[in-house]
Image 1 (cartoon, rainbow, N blue to C red):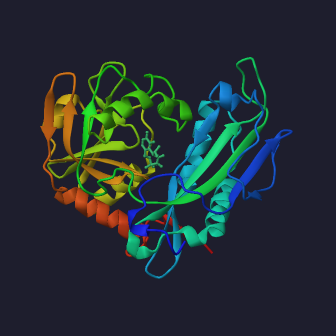
Image 2: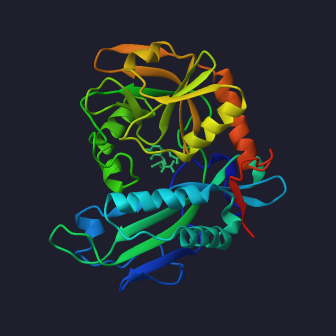
Length: 337
Ligand code: PLP
Ligand code: COI
């Protein structure tokens, strides 16, 4: 690990040490197991492969100045994975078992947690898949849960520098009453075509409008959306976006800073009123947005090439809690023993 360039990691897969696994067989979850393999041996008729029975999570661990490693809000990820399981009829992993597995995976890879000074973090990827064979469209009877980890830098290459988004109405990532609110692989498969198009055009992500009417802002491909105006933090309320744990945390911090917080439908037209806009998520952290380009009407919304005042304050506060530089007043972090 000595030879890792911690400051320039980027966001990508990297082989680390052991991963943690747990199998659901014969109607119950087994004990946690440790594996040093990056591969799984899976039935050719597993439901994950054919019918998309697959959910994942994303969370991070941070090394503080004090050398201690903190995992951010893993109970929330555990609960959200259970919601995803309800959404696509998979067996739910108990919250305690999820947290134990995450803790163990981090502990086994403690040398991969980037040093405090690097500003990087350990990305934790829990995954739950249907492994039992079916050929009719039905839920599997067997499941596998895995947690693996890797050190990462910022998701958008710009880091905290403002980035550009694009609106393209002919693509939806999720149906109005579909699976958009779950963290399931199918949503991400559905976003690949336009995601790559966006990148080819020099944008870091697609900004989706609601799939039914195309009147309201939904979210970005890999992150929630927020806008700030008149001392108010505004973020979309929608049934087809992922309930972001980062966004939920930022709303608390915003309130604490004296901002008003509104979670409501955000009409497209409001894009011209915001003083600051941003994308937020575990991988994206807070990514300020400098320009939103509406490719269908050749219209652009500009927010300036420097991060806004509130986005900067929120970013600094969130990071300070995650790295242990500010007190954890909300009980969000768990130490790795
Ligand atoms: N929206 C989507 C589609 C995502 O994939 C993510 C990433 O997890 C988020 C939002 C942000 O959620 P969180 O803050 O819980 O990471
Ligand atoms: C995350 O922020 O954890 C994500 O899952 C976003 C993306 C990598 C899918």
